[in-house]
Image (cartoon, rainbow, N blue to C red; front, side):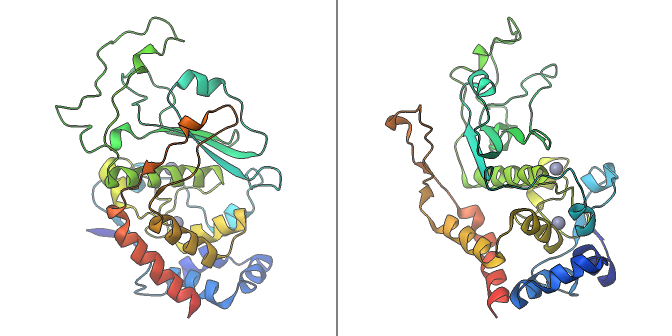
Length: 302
Ligand SMILES: [Zn+2]
Ligand SMILES: [Zn+2]
């Protein structure tokens, strides 16, 4: 197995940069935060490792693109940052696609991400809205249908029976659509896709520095291989865009894992109480990740 190797010096520059302003900004982070971020270039770090290459169809081999270091990210005039009036990330579960598409983005939305268990790409000719995020619009829509363990099996129950659409506004094939079981693996895959794509909305490009959530992925096996969290270089980008303490972020992640269910109220003023659903949250597949987050917290609090 090959790895994408970078020298200590390259990773250090990608993280801290050579721009005196950005170096100064970095030095103002608290010692714990610097200690954690510095793991990016510490040889044999047990928190962050290199990107591994498994086959020529892997993203980094088949999609050559320029890497983005912290300085390039920071100086991109078009990247989006939340503002006091626009800082909510809306995750919209979509049953009726058309209704969703007609809905306006709420005033205080930083972005709206539509998620659905319906396969949005049932036929070759329907090449629309399949896992796309638009940086400028702050919207994205994703289907997790193909993340179910049964999607590629011959007994997958979600295959469309009705093959033709009557008109471009006919979405009736999606009525009573088959929903795969919400397994722990499906939840993990969905979280990875969702947070990766939201990262793009914040202006993070694909990561070529270390094993990282922001690595591009070409196929499911490669997506499974990338970790659920950001490498220090991408983490500094997100921190700079959003403005949070690393400790608060990791603690919030542990709280999310430990909470029994996805208890976020999914109501908008128009919805009735019956739609306040508590979804089960199978988290067995997140165990390793939780241990990793806990180790990061230990480094921050040393
Ligand atoms: Zn991507
Ligand atoms: Zn990264």
